[in-house]
Image 1 (cartoon, rainbow, N blue to C red):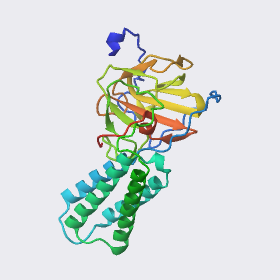
Image 2 (cartoon, rainbow, N blue to C red):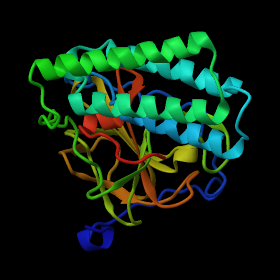
Image 3 (cartoon, helix red, strand yellow):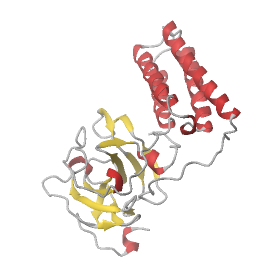
Image 4 (tube, rainbow, N blue to C red):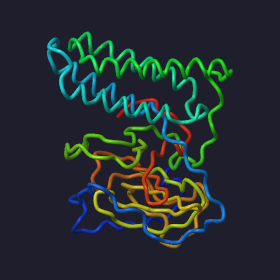
Length: 296
């Protein structure tokens, strides 16, 4: 459903002196401190899938191999990337077994083994301590896979139901949560949400029941709406072309908030979607109940 098809009246609030020149803040301010009902607290997410981390790692590794001659051993930045990945895998494997789906574990093991083989073949031998570090994580992944299979956990077990609804229907994922190189200014910084690719003018709906606490211009986010939900959960919707709500409005799941646009610091029309809990950002994909299928 497009904005025009919805027959809704929009409010445009782009300041003349800031439109086209606003800069996205390095770190967004935390959600506004507006009391919300705590009678029905949402269960805290177990954590984002490991797939997004591995996708970013594999993309960076391919870039290093494509731009550098082979031989000479792993370069320092590749060594640092592998050590960081080992730490991410430690955090992932520290979760309870039900929070590490079997199919996800298999994908992780295959990706780590393949990227390690590619790097060593291209760059040359790795330091012995790094090789041992990576081998131990592959062993731990294999052990958990064996345990999951022994307990009868299937490769295609039904996923947990999503906690939030998609704010845009039939949207793709063009950029995931985490560190990235900004597509406009080229700076390496944290991306506090996910970018959902959708045509300009599509209606953006609330991800859950709540009330609007902010609706207006916010620097590089352009026109942005912030919605507070029960349990201290806050969602944000950025780069909107027009607003369909105002502060204080109560919204139901799917209630119209605005329309997809490219206001603020954006290279094209899309929705920037963030999820905050207790004043801390978290990966929206964990709340939407999906595993990303493509990298940035």
